[in-house]
Figure: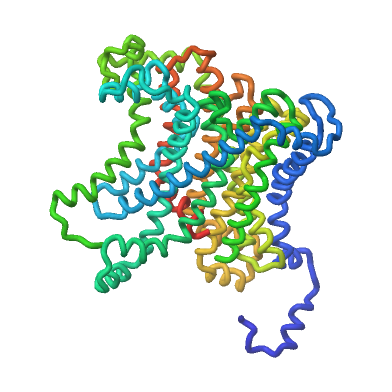
Length: 311
Length: 281
């Protein structure tokens, strides 16, 4: 920019200055790659290498603390013939699907409720985010106690309202256990949707609503034709992010039900843990974990393409 | 938006939904707190009203702090969270600065890869990582988690900081460059001091993620003396079929407090990080 008025020749002469180490280091691309080298090497060593090592493990018959032997696709064939594996796959999809819809709808409700004028708004927003920031394991322990077979406060309240004693077995019946983990996942993730969508709502210009009102739009129509289209990209990206982490969820299920009863709440991550860490079958466990990859890869590609389009 | 509701209508439309969400969000915390100060006679009585305390006691807290290793776990958790957050902020900045500020071939590819690495979930990596940590002889050391937490936190911090760095105007750096400052000097003396809010957002976020981490800690740390709070609580306060609920709830509450305090001081930064991470991309 500074040399714009000088003749081209002069620019050429400027660049032919003798290259010293410090001017070389100061070149844009040299500086950039040197600066990025440590983090890139770190990520290659602790994400890239384990990722490919995991693929290699999944092709081996490998017990913990023993050398492995190459087994080709045997582990995957074993998975495909394992009824528990298919049960776990279907659990994972049900869990992810229902929890995502609940979080999206609930989060939108939360955002709309918070996007009104009232007192103590910042304090309330801070409190609403607590479920999201408190360590999952610790809040799940609280839910475990609230759903305890003998002393569940939920059941004691329900019994007051006429539900027959001893009340539902929240973690003991397959369907209710699935219901419980979905609700607790929703409880934890909903504020993330709510607060992010709230930020999106606050970018909607008031003039649009005024114009819509003048054109005769009612409350629902303003929501449907003004709010939703503007929120759509945010809803999309938040949902994609959350689907990935719900699909690969581990902590909540490990703590609350350990996958039980009878694998009713076992997810791919917890099942891979049982096989790989519990039973010490590293190769087979790695193959179970890797079956998450196709679905995850689709989502990851979708997000990265979307982010690139935006930037 | 549209105003002019009467006071009753306003209560119904504004406060009813807000209070409903608040009730659902806070109920488990109320339950943790109230359980942790109930004597056992009340905890396991089906006659007393479960929602109230009649004879509050601090016994569960005293037991937790004197008979278990809770304080050790808290110290470990803090140490690991602080060090891995610091590492991640430094490495994240080293990735984000060139991507945000310098045009060089390959920048787009690296930016996309960072996003993709951030999205790789732990369950995909824990089995090979367990084997690698074993071979490096790092099992049961805090180093194992200090090394592995940044695998999630570095891409995350880089991504968040990249978004923040792009919002800082270029003029000051351009002026410094024209005055003859090297790129390194420009970055360290001019640019980074301008980015404190971005570092606070990324730092708090990374810190809460590190406190929340469970899977790696569960696998790598099997000795009491090196455990973190979540793993210690799950593996040692839950013994077989006997649950010490008073102690467990005291631990859950105390374990949540450091995060909650730090969060309450910087809640605006946290929300800014949350929304810029997902909204601005």
